[in-house]
Picture 1 (tube, rainbow, N blue to C red):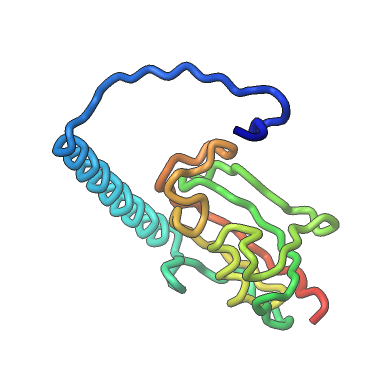
Picture 2 (picture 1 turned 90 degrees about the horizontal axis):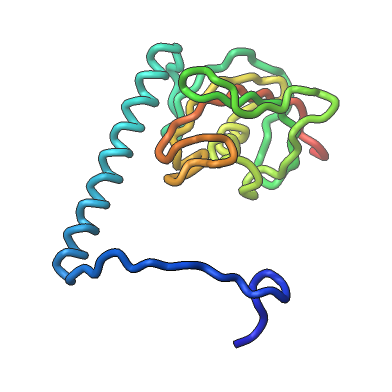
Length: 171
């Protein structure tokens, strides 16, 4: 059958069949699952809007609520350019789960190449060097419908990012 997926050792798993569903039961379970996902998305949207209202994030761009905390005077970042940013990532309760705040070791990425959260990619293209924003991203622009076990982010959870565009490299 070819190579083992993890080197030369086989992978073993115990599997227990707990229930066999009829086609009708499977269709009903699928419908219930889709409805639950829809309700989670609606709840997420209301949480993001409530956070935006409470924290005065009055601007909206592509579904992202944000505010400009500091306006810079540098050049505007564009797709395919390399940028350096600082950021702080928080849950809606303001618990920090990630950060990159050392200007000597900024987060460096190429805009539009899916190297960071999609929300950051979108917002950086609206920023000039020196701009600093706070934005709330819905899961579709951050960790997706599944969340992130690495950061303890549940599925369908909006997150808040403070982002500063330090530099556009090689303009």
